[in-house]
Image (cartoon, rainbow, N blue to C red):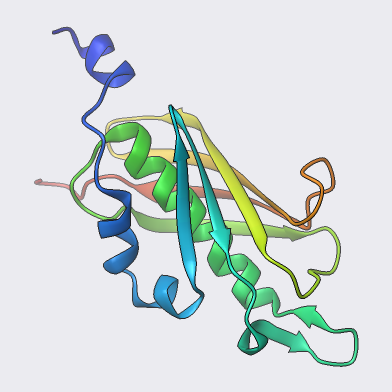
Length: 146
């Protein structure tokens, strides 16, 4: 099998295992819905996720962490790596307030090298065409010497 074939058809990891390896993913009640070659992450709403009770609105840190874990899950899914990708840098754009409802996320790798992957992710609630936040990040696939 050529390197190109391996990149197109990597071994798919158990994504539930990746979430179990991240305690904060369990705290945020994040799950993954996989249909064919696409994954969608879901952060089920819980009262503990409210950051502003007056609006009420989701906490920005919960939204940011959700986008980070969405990106990590996508990198693991597409690359088939055995270890949890480590974030190098992540920028979050908060586009609108998160309502007290379930939040969905999708990500795609925009560039992948041997050690680093660049990922773009979006989170939405009722309407996918109206994202509440977007993220752009770089993730370490493997450390030097691995």
